[in-house]
Length: 382
Image (tube, rainbow, N blue to C red):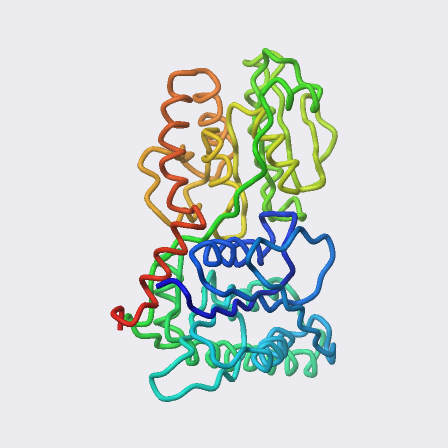
């Protein structure tokens, strides 16, 4: 339904890093603008920004930092962004859904329609961050209880305000229903819009830039987080060490997280779209071993480049990969090494998985996600 006015609310400016939480929102905003919608993105200011997509207007929203890093800060941003929404307005998209109400004013059953992307429960993330932390006393336990209550109240407010809640994993939808009673009619499965990388350089050019010989196998491992433990860097390194004796000259290109100096390991600490493109262009196989649950856009980026991705059984893929992803038997580095060795040893299997991977990746193209979203929020969708 082209020609709508759409305001997108997200947590940061257009990023250089496709792993940033705001990356999917900007990719979707660009795709909606290309469909003919009048699109603005309301966002928190930030550094390390990329260009604003054509046809999209960027609106930075400043908020007072009353409690920097506190659990209620996202709700303060939601309230501030809500005051900047246009009138009239057809559609509001929150990506991620986050905490707190926008306070969008609308007539009963009238515009704007409010939709949000629930990648995970904020309440579960809050509890996960505090696992293993010992309380120092009664006041500390009381503050934690108050913060948890605030997070739950504010997440419920965001969910109550939304007319559609998009999710990328069944376990997220189940948790929303069990924890907050979100009805099935409000929940819509939709894969994330994964932004496109710059055009990949040639294999020869990328290997020249990375100082990798042209005739050795290369494994790329994009890290989902700067923290090596969360990204599973230790698992990747151990799997690589196990296969290295069987593949002379093999290299591991690790992007986005620090790692110890190991033979054959190349570390690219800056995880940007251009460095990821360079690394993927050089690679034969990609490995993903994150410990934190969630969708990993790097799997899609590797699949688009026809680089067979290897993931753990716990990986969240959003859509059925249909042979386009190689799943290790378990989280154990030994099973990860076996999967890695299997692909490195057989170019025919690599090619087959790579071809299936490119088909799998099409579901995450921003234009496809924008079309599916437009269908889900159309008047006939109810």
